[in-house]
Length: 112
Image (cartoon, rainbow, N blue to C red; front, side, top):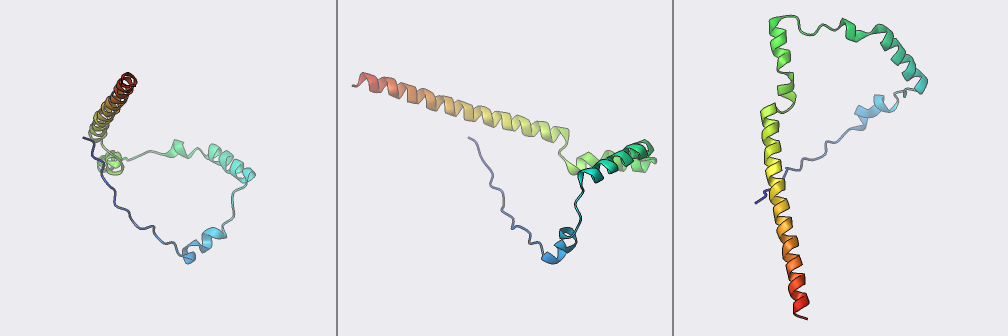
């Protein structure tokens, strides 16, 4: 049996016009401005100065970043296995239905 959980519908957050005032008047980037910024960043090469965490405590904290923001590998693999099992069950049900419909058509043709 496939059980589909119902998600709770959360109300759409209301955005006040006051919070959009600065955004609405904000100038848009032109293609030339984007290209100029791309060239500047390419010259600065900020990725070359990035060192990452330096202390043991910083390394320990940063090693947990993915765990905090996404599923762990075991949770992901478990979820994928469950999904594969449920999809297999759905495929078997659909196959049975198609087979039953085919047999119904065969039986109906003999009853004519």
